[in-house]
Image (tube, rainbow over all chains, first blue to last red; front, side, top):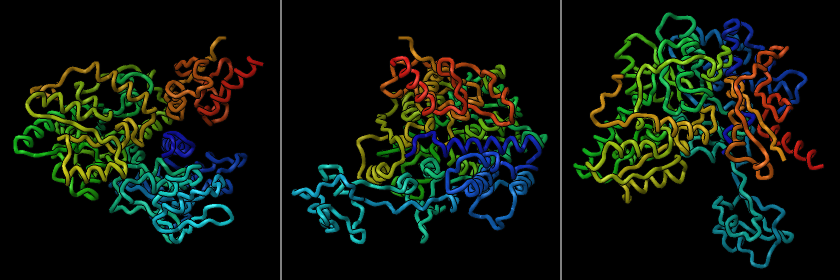
Length: 488
Length: 89
């Protein structure tokens, strides 16, 4: 996968900032200038010419306004008019990752290639170990017949000179469930039936060709054009995502127009209590295994791709679910906005009537920049409810299993294992655990390696964010099964 | 020898626009400069509000006394190396 921050991801942030600025300036009247401002004439083009750069930028802006480039019907439709659509729509468009076909560089099909480091050696392990007899020696060098090659990689493993290289297709390699594949023209497409919305393809495409629909404009409209009470629900991974302390952030969000700010770590405390109780109950009934259910990408992967594990997935709801339930109970007519590191949460929210919108930290960051809000200098305000240490540790790999362990105590035999990152290999591992059993009886599954602090919607460096979350956990009170969560 | 001082602006604007990524210097600095740099996070220096045209040129980073606009990890590392080289010369 690409390093978390690169030119493609920086551009995505800039686009979101420009869209938010355009909203504030004139409600998108001049939005068609955005691609020109991001790619002025004097700048060196990134692709073949600035005009193609701008065309791609226009599609990326469309996604930033919540439209889907794949569903474009009129190429002449302006960004101004996409902006007007965003401001007038009442219903959110369905969340969807999609490929901008003109931006997709149609990478060559993944393949093994012999580089010029090949010495045409006497041993020829590549040729002898190839199960398909695809390798022959031509002009003193190994040659792979693409018709016969099945991409098993054995030649690559055995070459003493490391002369055989693998050229991957980054998005296909990143997708753990095979949802993104080439069409007849070599361009990539995402199969929405298979997609688990983890965002790994989006983070890995070196051409910035993969986009998802943003709900930022819909939230800006709620904050600035309606009288609705809007409540921000901050995912536990928020700690460390912006400079300043959590109280500064609460104040900054209120400055941005939110009426109330609550930690989803509060809901995570409830998840911890219920999941611990569920674990004990399942153990008493003789269950061999339980897995967590709070990662929405894993939850969907289990449903669609790993049916074997499905019976073992916890029935406890997610921290977002319990938080939104609390908020809507207190203030029935408010609008709730979940703010997190995750793209799959948008899909989860579509099935949760208590969650109205989902934003990423990046989108909130763009809103701050456009509104010229500096978090550190926004003063201090309190969260409307205070979380415990257990709920706070959810966004780090091992955190959920650890939190549940604290509540299970000695009431059951608890042997946790963390599945850190939903890779192709780990999906196979989960299938094996479900069918053949495993040594441990509690599996914590997180789709993003390292936990939610490495999610595709994050702003801060995962290492730095992890440290901040750990410090915050250390200051929290201990949760017990009797704690009345959400009462203070 | 005195360490090269890297001042990274941690105003929200700089942070969101890429200063966060430059903090990688704290965790995984290139070996050749690892023990020769000192990293300081500074509050918003208001440079984003002082630009003449309407474009924000953040993130802003100072390497010793030199200001880097639209800073990236790469630009900062290159600047540090060139300062170290001129000291050695």
